[in-house]
Amino acid sequence: MKTEAPAYKRVVLKLSGEALQERGSRENISPSVVREIADRIKDVHSLGVQISIVIGGGNIWRGSSAAVRGMDRTSADYMGMLATVINALALRSTLTKIGVEARVQTAIEMKNVAEPFILGRAIRHLELGRVVIFAAGTGNPYFSTDTAAALRASEIGADVILKATKVDGVYDRDPNTDPNAKRFERITFTEALTKRLQVMDSTAFSLCMDNNVPIVVFDMNKPSNIRDAVLGRKVGTLVCGEAETT
Image (cartoon, rainbow, N blue to C red; front, side):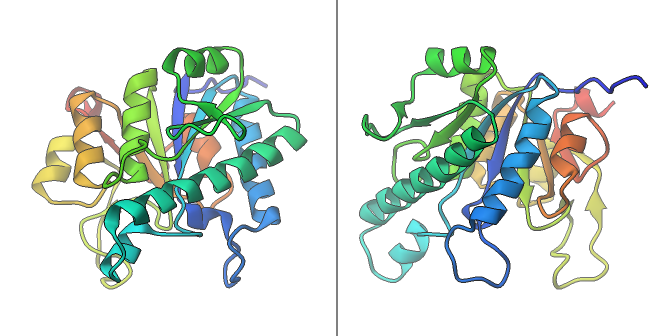
């Protein structure tokens, strides 16, 4: 039986912090859920794909929410960046336990915990078959982890960003409130802007559009979706440039 070839050689997987939580649980990080995610990453890694990951920290702390409640925005955002480091360490530990070599690189230097982000070193890790987890966002307040994913993808020359979400793609309206909402299988950056679709925040989306980094938005809750997306199967919504839609 012929094995399918991956559609992408180098990917950035964008995970929310909430992806590490068990549904209905108040636990910030569920070891069993982290293991499930690690197993899916290992499955894709076994295809020979170079995988880097950007993970959020919303399961522990949301800087923007704290700022709305009166906290200084800069301090709140730095706390959120530290939350992403906690999540990255949890994922790295689990990947290591199941036999996948992984490194955490952080945009905020903490040499006793993780490597600093160094572009050349990150690319070398990927070339050697290691999973690289980018933590602490961009290292700057007022920027989301979506923006960090777009920035790192542009820097490392990733073929695509795989954005894992709670919904199965990009819709013209909120599918949670409108049963007639239409899901797009494929849409251009320009169309997404014109229709004002919330694919990523505006800074992240602009980075992807300017650097022609496609985005696949898919449902994280279906176990096979990461593998299917990497293999180029129809999963969720592909957001890409004009030439790639033809």
